[in-house]
Image 1 (spheres, rainbow, N blue to C red):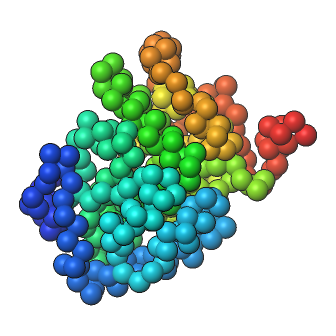
Image 2 (tube, rainbow, N blue to C red):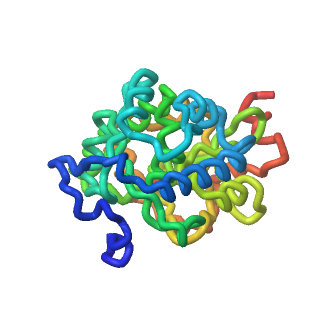
Image 3 (spheres, rainbow, N blue to C red):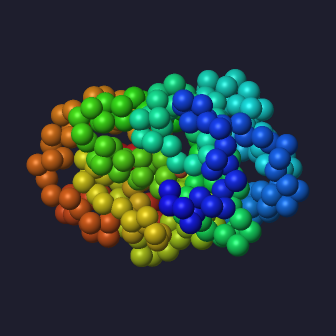
Length: 290
Ligand SMILES: [Fe+2]
């Protein structure tokens, strides 16, 4: 994280444990910061209706995320732990890869403790508490997705040993951050990067320009991504079970195969793509064998 972005993060110099966790110091949030959370939450909850996947919407209610004020991560963890054994732990900013994977592999999600400043109400580049809790935590209450995230953490540790992190990171990007799912005969959102952005929530589902491609593990690992604009390609899973099934294995052989194929630009499609056009149910009928 560069100095100009960290300067507004008051947790930047907070004492951190060896695993990079800090004290959320919940009592130090100002009334304005709690109010900012409430406004972010209300706006995004409204936009997410009918667009976020059922699992995310259900979990927002189960975890009582609509309660006033910035969530207390300890209390939130107590609720989440009962559902899937996951906890949310506060960190000051993005943590090193090996620390991140160690947390995930042990069912701990590191969440930024700071909330974006008012002038960045609509968009900020680094993950704050709204992105991490509104975007990521509801999905961790889903038992299958919770297993996927733990497996991803373990896969990250393995990818580091193999020098293949760049390929694995694309899987995270196109699923955990920007994933779409087939649900109720339509498309819904489960990716946190979309769910925490009002404009991309609408764009990802309703704009004509991005490619929407059926999930394919190798295709994703070959695909570059952009970090400073809406995505040009979204990948669509059939179900969380299908995602876990496709990824619950050692990726050693997959990395070898990916290495032998050309990279795909973020905006490109390739002939093997199963493209999904929202509003036509052909894809879903085909998939369902109807
Ligand atoms: Fe994220």
